[in-house]
Length: 325
Image 1 (cartoon, rainbow, N blue to C red):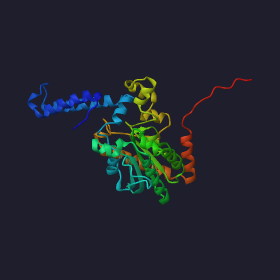
Image 2: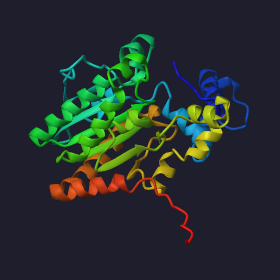
Image 3: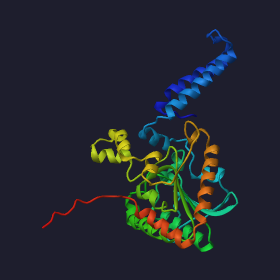
Image 4: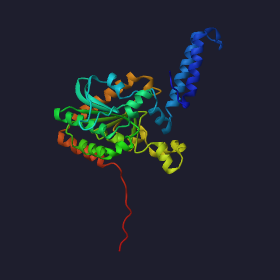
């Protein structure tokens, strides 16, 4: 069953007309042949799609990033990677199924890949905790990253989470500490690290596997310190102001690249990644391999210095000059 967003309504109406015309060719009435009318409608659908998706608002891109049919980490592991062998558990508490990770091949490159995973229906979402990691998920991710560092394998992380799980159990097991340790340790890993935001990139939950030499983002993904709804609830006391908050937060791929917070934007098929997951995976694979080659060319010491400087450069601010006494 297809899922359409409200701003896609003009495209949906044209598609319905096209389907009806194909089922009932005798109904065409434009004074042209049936084949010509089919081609005309197909061209109108393409034109409408290009027009709508070329001027999406930040809030509309957020909604695309959350599209229920959007490819998740396991989809990219199937289409962009090969020989994936999943590893489980943090060796301390349990196995957080909101995280998947293990050994894989990216083209001819052997890597360790780690990502957050959402579910497509209720049962799977409960299993995956809606893609929101517990402390043991971040500790599992760090265990796999240390394993990669030990064997000299590049690390690829795929980010798609609204944020780390904020429940009582998560707090009892020190979610803040788990994320903070990941931030510190990822700065020190000597192997190349490439992170890609494939959907939602929410707050510390995303950053906990996002410290990397290069950070990529899909065209309709977003990366933010807070969700638009959360920001709207704080600033405007009304979650309905989420579209205004999304605009103010500058969380889209284009804004993030302009601000220097991401290094590259991976293009998606017209209409979003869910319209052609294989093509999106191919684009992501190409971008990952290109950046991996560039990062690997740097000596280890220089790579660590560059990674540290990259994140230290974020968050510019100014202070007023002190008045002379």
